[in-house]
Image (tube, rainbow, N blue to C red):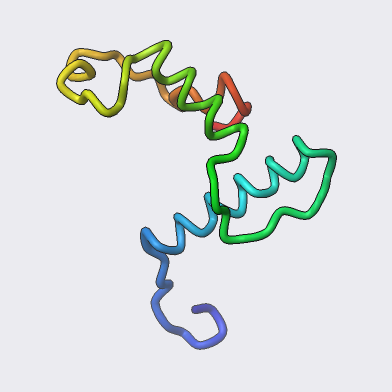
Length: 85
């Protein structure tokens, strides 16, 4: 965008890829800095831990009606598990 003077194009698909890379980097670290292939084909350890913490704190995300009155903190559960803001 800078070199061609065009609008920056960044949307949900690019964000998903960025999060997948971040998750793969964390998984590589958790496995002793081994290579992790993309695309990821199964949930990573960190993803499983973040979801487990979410269920523990807020409830099952697959039952949204039970989450209607939840008080979600900034950063959600990923900060507690992975130290991600």
